[in-house]
Image (tube, rainbow, N blue to C red; front, side, top):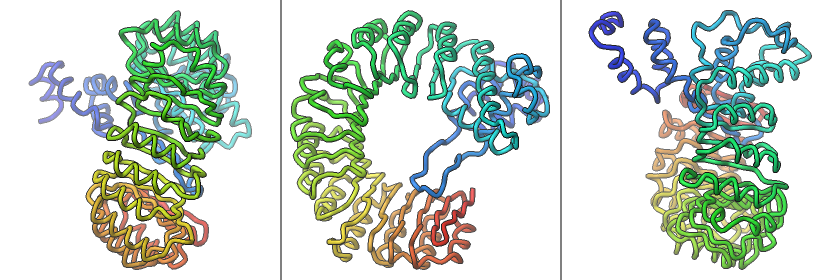
Length: 512
């Protein structure tokens, strides 16, 4: 049936209901926009309500790849810029003189349809687009003026805003008018913005129905933060606080009600200094103590986490074995994600890993820096955590025998081969046969890191192509001396939509 026949056969409300089921398919919605005016009007409101969610943005762990995964981000920015008035010369002179990328004016005001604003993603896409297409030496000023023009347009044209996420480039004169104009904003993310007491007072005055509030704290008054949270009673579902200075003083000054409402706590790059002592968290789901100077043995014994803590990040933080044992015994079956990469822990955390195997069978993500003498304990952990999806075991200490690594590979295959999606085995001396058997039995792998694995060769790559084609999205075989450029060329053709990192000549082959 043609679209014209469909319009005659069904009322507009029914067509809208049908199109609304395409909300998770941006390509289909974009096709609808190109069909006719009615379909465009009905589809654009769905596609541009929160367009940022359709873009996968992630920082690659490899230093060889630094680019956006989805290049269509620039197209989104071009579409938004095409909605702006053509005359930029008065307020944004650089944009008016040099920005000649937009060929025509948009037929619809897509900016007015937007309900969710992700400033970090917008700035990143904007920066990538102008950097790649403009040869003007004054790129930074063009980027900034385009950013300010878009920010002003969102504030002036959006009918309603449900969520706002800021970034380092955001200033109070950008987000304050949006908050003031849309007091019913439900999701406010200020994690990347240095907040002040004045910001707290402004948000308390203007935001009345926050359901998600993410906030970075440096020198803010605890009483003001407590007052802000308490004004959102009956609404606030998620409260994330990132502390970048004096954690003990701030946490001690917060009311018990605020402590009980925290769902995500981040203390980064600081001394813990008993900052958590005596606190009673009731809804804490995620705890990030990354890059802290140390976590003492009794840190997790003097704090109540409640029954909801599922994620803990201890990367770049020195953690004792006793602290890990305490952590495992307190979190028990609730813990699903634990990161200790690289943590600078003691010479061995074998007993800590055994405690995790005993108390935390529901772990689905586990990351450890260097395996020293803990291989047997890691085997116990893998046997216990049957649903493990992400496993990062970092480098392997020279004292470990290669046959033990092969045994561990067999343990991975037999216990979590059905569930594992990401596996990092960099620097392992695992055998060729063990790699072949691994990819044969772990068919759900979407990311595989084999960097510096001295025994990985062309036969391993052939098996990866044979068993993981269609599912593998990322393969790192950098600095594998037995992997040749010729086999990488073959893998490029067979592993569609997979990014392949091969650094034998320090180059990256991509097939996106």
